[in-house]
Image (cartoon, rainbow, N blue to C red; front, side, top):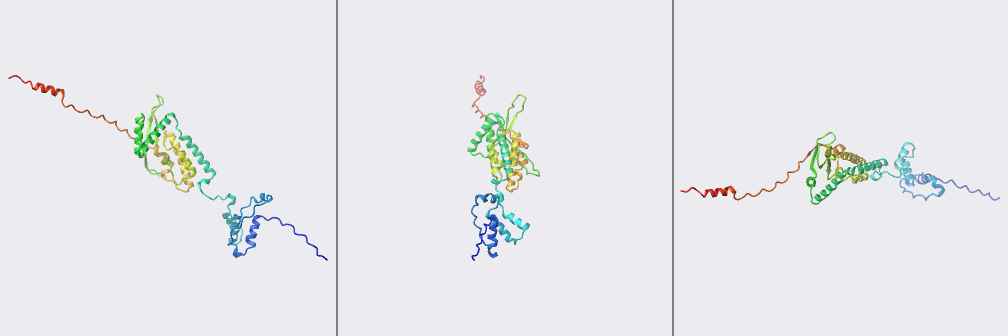
Length: 318
């Protein structure tokens, strides 16, 4: 009698990628070769029916790391296995473990954008008189820098040029004492006393700094702080109240940049030190006296001397 043919076995249910990889790495390989195996080739892309189910699974590289950690830990489950898998698996976080400044947290980027917008609003001159003074200052600074003037000489030349244009300008030197948070120091800048806007008003004091942006440079600036530095003016012209707000915003951005780089905030970049540069008690240098006119040459002989000579020649008769 002919043996009854057995029905073919039904097709096995498709295995998940994790199960296939585990069988290939653990069940079919000898223990001596498990740790020496190269990384397996990635499996072919899943079909349309499996794409949805396997979209939440880790990559093959990540699963291989999990298997290796399982073997190294002796196959034991529990917290050790979960910790090893968590250390080697980062695919659920898009593989982002870099602390580069270009991929910072969204909250830090939003804060930096807010500071940049605040600085942009504070940079613009508050009045037409400040805008006109800024145009004059920029022209004179560029002219004297081309001639090779240094900072202190540049300030004196700028003050003299502004006085020649009719402004009451002078070099100011602010000084502050040492405190528990920052050292002592001094800073030179130019101030201009503008005429009062009304009969009962007071003269308006405007501060002028020719190297304002360079005062906020820090080591290893982040991308966000470099954008803030570009918003700061190279030459500042404005009142002390606007400068106070601008210094506070820039100092906060500098602190955030140094903290993100893991650097210590130096005392000369603290907000109180930066404010002291322009808002401390100051001495206003008096302008030099105008040059005296050249002296007139003396006459060779005076009228009296000529008359005396004539009288002396007419003596009494004998």
